Length: 289
Image (tube, rainbow, N blue to C red; front, side, top):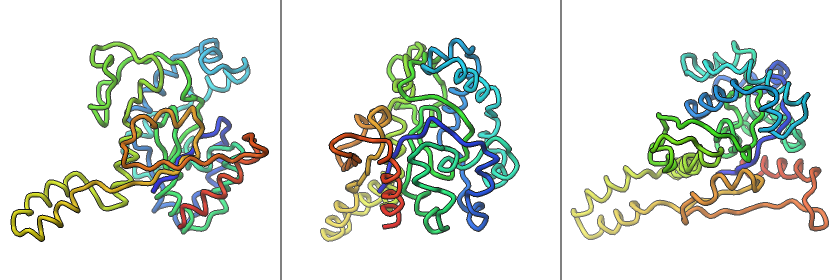
């Protein structure tokens, strides 16, 4: 099971976060790097080339926020994600990066209160909570991130990325060397595929188990029946607490065996920002079950 949420536009400074999260007792165990290192570096490098005026238009922000965004990308260190250092070492030596769940500073993340979680709660969140991101793709709570601004709905034209984690997920036009028209097209199905792979791993299933079990199915009729059972991919549960903007990036790529439960937190039939804190407190309970 995974619980998926959206990121926040507002972010804390890494220095502030490092004082509280993750707790010293679990920081070595939980500190981690984002999965899509090539993709995020490709995007960050592209955003570094943008002027204030271009960022203002792309991100639909004020002049002052465009300047702040420009500074974020100017300071963004893509070398952090080369994996030359263990994540726990990078967490303690890199000034600009800290755990994702504590770096985001919107109402929902204040409700999540990452710094107040007990070690067992942090471990449960790391295993079952995922954050969708326009820049990072898919994040765990303790993945090291840097300050950025890039909504999934940003109409950013991007050159194709040659090396992808899952080559079959490349949009058709990128095979012809044409630019991606937006972030939905850039990411394609890779985020959804990674989510499914992680949930399969939680269930102890992989495509390799299917082929290995079927190879031994001829030994007897009973083993054949057992093989048939274990070769079937498991039913999966995905709890969606993300906004439509972000869940659109994965929804159409999820296989039918993934049951999606979408949670809406309403007040008199309308969604309110104050309910985001309630949502995150519910997530803490769910990931511990």
